[in-house]
Image (cartoon, rainbow over all chains, first blue to last red; front, side, top):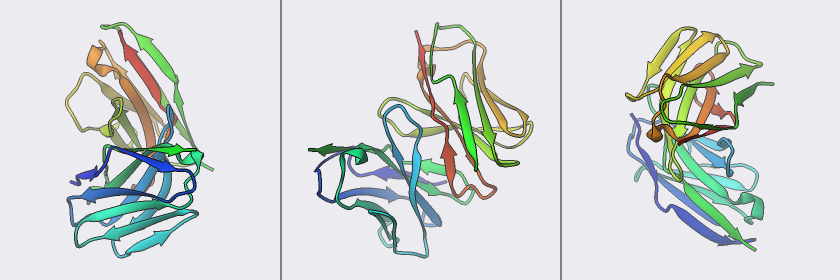
Length: 111
Length: 112
């Protein structure tokens, strides 16, 4: 199976600055990773994904970086906005197609 | 488009009472269905998943059970709730290869 974990439980960022959320995984055979955003009292929402044959993938204001050498991925949010305040989870897909989630990083955007 | 419905949004139940949480999916056929639990400030713990009607896999031993009476219906149950069953319960569905999961809005269960 897959074991994933995030480096920091909380992150405070000034509005307009860039945010970087980190995640480490244990299973080098994992071939797919997903970032989810969860707002208070709601279910997680898909943000962006990346396959293991990629190093980087960009979306709208978000970029995911994958470093397979050190088994690390990160989510970068450009020009962080108040609406970005949420808990962010990384998830890895193991070979049995079950997602394993990290504990989450709570991002708080300061005005 | 596919949608997932989960209810109720909040539930307060006494210890020892039964539980039934329902989840339905629309707009897709033969989805893989999941129940997750999230303790306050924690990550998501997979409880059950189902790849078809009547097929249930349990991930952790616990006081809960799941059933899938119809293709797009997934039910989480308990005969007697424990205090430790409190948490945020999330239903999710995925495609055949489960590369993405789509979550319901969750049920906040408080067992008192």
